Every structure is written in structure tokens, then in C-alpha cells.
Length: 262
Image (cartoon, helix red, strand yellow):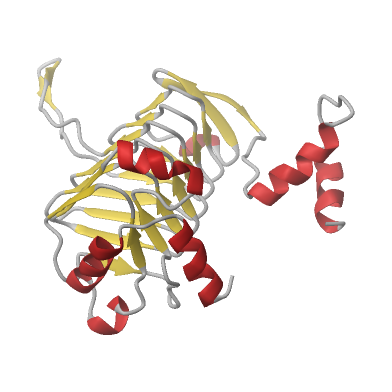
């Protein structure tokens, strides 16, 4: 998408223009701020921001390469006004290209904590993310409605005569998909191409199961391997055309043929 076309598209999504300008010049040096890499939407409360608290990891960041509080679909504008967002950055955030965090989000990055998000990230309405130590999210990840990601239990407990650490880093591998209402707790490590079922709770290291696995339940357990989300709205539309005649499924081979013949 060209620069002018991209700007027009973002303006159609009705950003919070004045807060966007203030935010970019507050956080980035002038040569980066003038490119408006971060666009804010709707009602958004901001605390703790300072020069350098956000680092852009993509070498050629586009206008609106990061969108917070909305910026996904024009029909979501009403929701962005109805569900305000909250952004508190006392630590550091590292962001890639094409990062969209929808309305109603709460992001709290404590002092000395790090949140790292890769390229092509989407989080739907109602994300609650708290980083007390470190949260790493790989490229091409998707987060459904009303998910929670927290690397802390907030309080200490005594169990079997021991007091455990209340902070533990989180790692979400590339292409991870968290369905609606998933809770990710401290110490979670998900391998690449993981799928986590709706309303599940993940709270440990799952990397022993390898890539392309489904985890579900409270707490989540391994279900089976050989599954991954197909990324890209255009691919989903393409697949839709295959089910108009009542088919129950198409093979991966048929899908690859569709993509090549697109």
C-alpha cells in the first residue's frame, strides 16, 4: 500500500489526531516523530510515557505502522468510543511493523519491564496486558477478544512451606493464535504456530510438544499436533468460495492450488 493510500485509509478509521501528534513527538526523536509511526484511536488514557520508552524495530516504519485503541475496521469506530483504552509505560516497549491493538485495551509496562511485539500483530477488543518483567510476542500472532496476558501473579503465596517468585517471563512463538477469552499467566512458553482454545488458561512451558499444536482447557493441556491458523483475510475469502457447494472440508493440497491460481 502506497504512503498516500495508507494515510487515506487510516483517516477513514477516524483516529484521535491531536493525541496521536502529541504522543509521537513526546516519545520519539523528531526525525522519527514526523513520520507518525504510532496512531491512536478513540478515548485513550496515557501515563508514564517519555522519550525513548518505545523502540521501533522495523528499519522502514510506515505511517501508522502501530495502531493502538482501534484502527482495524471502520465499523469498530463506535466501539473505540464506547470502550476506552489505557496505556501506561514505565518500562520499555519494542514494536515491529503492522501492529494493531484494538479498543478497550489495557497495557501496563512496569519500570524495568520489557514488552516486545513482532511484526504483523493483531489484538482484538479488550486485551489486558501487564508486564512486570518481560513478555515476548513473535511475528504474525493473533489475540482474540477479552484476552489477558500477565507475567506476574501480583501477590506472593505460601504453598507447601515455600514462597515462589511472583514474576516469570512469557514467550509466545511466531504465528500463535489465542482465541477469545484466553488467559496467559507467568512462565508461559508457547512454541511457534500454537493454537489456544477459547476460555483456556495457559501457565507453563509447552515447548516440549513442538510446533503446530492445539492447547485447551483450564489449565490448558496438549490436545493434538498438526494444526495452525491460516493468516490473511484474502485467504479466508478464497477458502469461502470452496464451501458454496456444501463441502465439509478441503485438503491442504487443494488450498495450495487455490493460492497458486489466485
